[in-house]
Amino acid sequence: MKAINFLKLSFFLALALTYSCGIKANTKPLESPVVELKRIGSKVFLRSLEGEVVPEGFIKIENYWLREQAQPFCFAVKRIEGKERTECVGGLTEERVSLDLTYYENRVRLNLKGFDTYEVYELEGERLNPWTGKKAVDGLELNRDYVKRCYLVVGKRQNAYSEPTEFCVEALPHPPIKEVERLDYRVFGDKLYLIWSYEPDNFFKEFVVLEGDKEIGTTRTHMFELKRKDKKVTYKVKVRSIYGKESDGVSLSYSP
Image 1 (cartoon, rainbow, N blue to C red):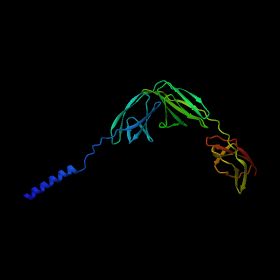
Image 2: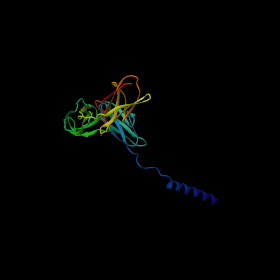
Image 3: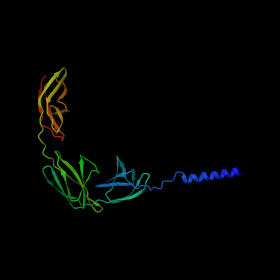
Image 4: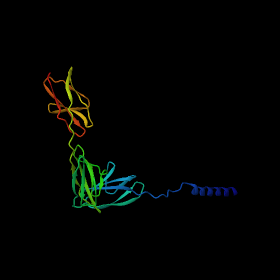
């Protein structure tokens, strides 16, 4: 009988130790989502700054979320294994940003009016990165380059956004592009090799080879291999800069 009581006592002691010394529940509160929002026209972009989130009514595109809606709206955004919160986005107005450009030697001053704050986004062809916008209050300075650069500007007043306005900064005059020198050719069997000399500068990108008026290839070396022709052909070698500008070119006639 005493043995049984001893066993019961041991069981209750073990049970008490399990509850007092075992794994305790995590009492740390779940984290709320931390996100960044950008409205550019009817498109609203969202990305998470901490952890993974799922915003209501958005679609996932690469590493951000997108929703198209011109009217103001609120939505729930939930952090995975965390809390949920409500975010709101203002709508579009019919007003547009008033802007003008003041040109200097290698920069331009962008003056902005009509809204409280602004964001300026550089266009990369037809693509736009919503996370690289530059904030401004009444304007900002932009560097000029040897190619035309185009931008979108969005104004914000309280909870209202302007339609995006596109503008372009004119290119600086491109420095003269040096031509190739001593353009010649060599024939070996059924191959023809164009050869030349050139001292590249900081603007050099590549050589462009043309047969007649048709571009047939590019190279960064001082030689270009061709199949030998059995008729008279005119070749031309141009120099292309990193900004896409080309020299007039140097021509060479080949006769079999």
